Length: 150
Image (cartoon, rainbow, N blue to C red; front, side, top):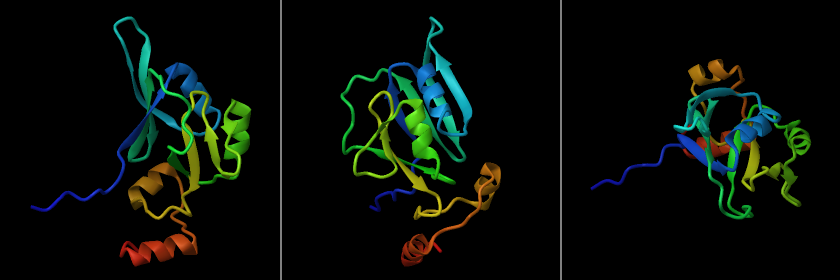
């Protein structure tokens, strides 16, 4: 029997206390479209889905754990040069000694990766829809060549 291959991440779900406040927080840092949302029978916003081309970030009501330290996830952006200043202005906690890392207001640890550095590629259709270039740095290209991707 052949095991299935991991081929990507469809979405990441972040737990937050207040989904509306989380949308406002992340909206101060990133340009994104809302893919959809879910309200409970009382009209309380329980989930929101931030579109990332062919993937999405889910914000879910119900954070109960302490702030994350080593556990984190990476968000890929087309230009990370302003992210940390925007994150600071939005109220994020900047992680010492870890460039391009911050904790959101709910303790979720976020690492910011520039698309040029990411060792994956998006299809031409997704790149067009997002309005970004397919540029990669030499390190990312070498890693992708080693894997037979480029």
